[in-house]
Image 1 (cartoon, helix red, strand yellow):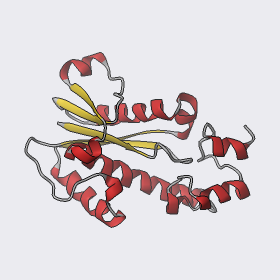
Image 2 (cartoon, rainbow, N blue to C red; image 1 turned 60 degrees about the vertical axis):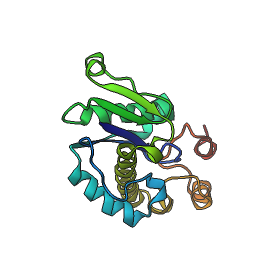
Image 3 (cartoon, rainbow, N blue to C red; image 1 turned 90 degrees about the horizontal axis):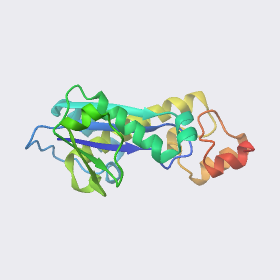
Image 4 (cartoon, one colour; image 1 turned 90 degrees about the vertical axis):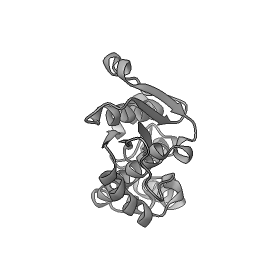
Length: 191
C-alpha cells in the first residue's frame, strides 16, 4: 500500500510538493504521524527512517507557474500524480490524503486501487509518512529559495502568509517565487 500527501498548498510562495510512500504490509515505523504534529527535528529523523524502511518512495512537485495557471488544487493533484508515477513499482492500493484523487493514466488505474481519505495524515501511517517526506522536501526547497530571494525570510516561514511575510511583500513586492494567483501577492504585484 502507498500513501500520498502534499505540502505547501496554502503558502504564498514556492511549489506544492507531494510525496508517495509504499510500505510492505505490517510495516510499523514508530513515531510516524501527521507532519504538522512533529517538530522539524522529529521530521528530519523520521524522514531517514521512512526512506530506509519503505519499499519505495517518490516526490513530485508543481511549480509556481503551474499553480498560477491551473489553480492550487489542480496543481496539488498534479504533484500527487507525479509522485505516484515516480514510484518504481505500482502499489496495489494508494491512499490519498483529502477528498480528491489525482487523475492517473488508464493503464495505471487498472492495476492500482485509489482511495481518497479525508484526514488520512492522522489515520493512515503511509499517508503520514508521505506528509513527512513532502514537508521535509519542501522545507529544503524553501531554504534554497530564501538564498535566491533574501528579505522575505522564506526559510523561516516557508512561504506562508505570516505577518512577517506579508510585511516583506508590502516592502519588497513579489519575487518570481511568489504565486501571483493568490490575492495577497496579486495585491502587491499589480495584478
